[in-house]
Image (cartoon, rainbow, N blue to C red; front, side, top):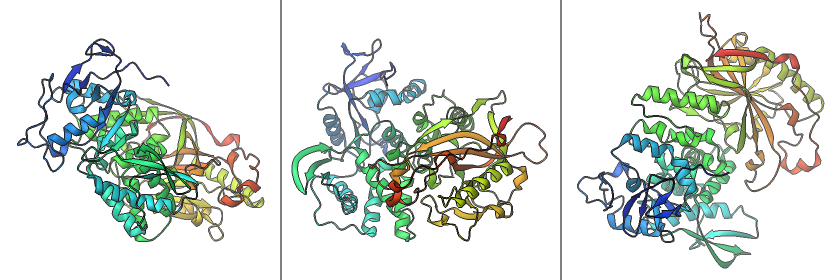
Length: 550
């Protein structure tokens, strides 16, 4: 897909260390459409007025000094030199964004996707991580990954770690070192990592490399290491340990999810916001500005944080009705604001994998600055009846279980919950489900009214759309396999005494599309022995047109 005609307002000419302003569409220093690289790094939390900053010419704003514990001016120059070794220009935020002009600053923030995607190469300068410490921690994760790799060829980090052990304790220690590096705690770098897969630079500007091995022999074919390598290693580690109840395994999985490795590996923007809430930002408004570009959202300057958050969430729900609702509030929120993301959210395991989202409703902004839903809806009771019929038919054919799920936001009475519905909890294998997580419970369909906490008769389901997911990635991210379609509905109720058309979110529900139910869905070894089952269409009368305000 062609990039939009958006170029950086400025680029740094590295030989002269001059910030060059753009002329026309894309001309810098007389050169039209020059190649340029970009650096992703952290500095906002390490400002030090007592330190002489790097000198950049051609700018009017003050460049901050940085405490030498994070990086020195000499090291900064080395990183700039390394990142621009094959090009004349570099995009560097402190040299290319007017730090004292909020209008220009926000304009360039809104242009981040084009700036990073247009760059020839992007480098993640991971200060203050020095080379030996970086390689040591990454090699522990590599050793754990290698013991499960049965391929004839693969790339291995340089230098190789031949004597490394890969116990879960060592993995946790290494992963903790990685995740606590400033680059992996910054909100801005999370967005930049999503927009462009950078090469990895250590504090001394040494480029991390790996070499191709075939039958354990080094072919001397070296390549720079992308961040994507680490993302995939962490993804494979998470999928292997996710259902392990060992406390060390649980800590490893939490580290991986909270740091954003799952979202980055799977390119799953729905999961990315959950990781963003665990990242650090210098200013509270950056909680929105520092992540919005992932969702293709451009916002004007807004000093009021509540209004900024409302604008972000309205843009999100109207443009990503499915992807923007795959979360649970971990703490009680105002029922009328439950459709908005909060800073304490939980992303269920079912959505921690690659997928494409398809909105099948119209979500617009009402004159009252509220989301207006227009689409298909039914009562929760009708949908439960439909689910029961499908599950009964599957049991008669000894087919895989349908197992729809309800995801309920936290209330004053209960924590957020994931309820896996079965037709007979005593005989169900739902607890072996790959998608069970720490908030999951299994419930017989008939017992739902007793455990839900809200009268089923009061609930409606607003059909949002579907997700087509590459579920084979749970077994091997590189192995082709089957896909599944998951349908998503928002669970809503009307507030007590409310006689208007407003309905309020209490959670959402998800179910595998009956048309794609696989007999061998949980039995990888027997997958090829089964055929895709005959379609089980949802009864026509279940859904009807519905409009409401959230």
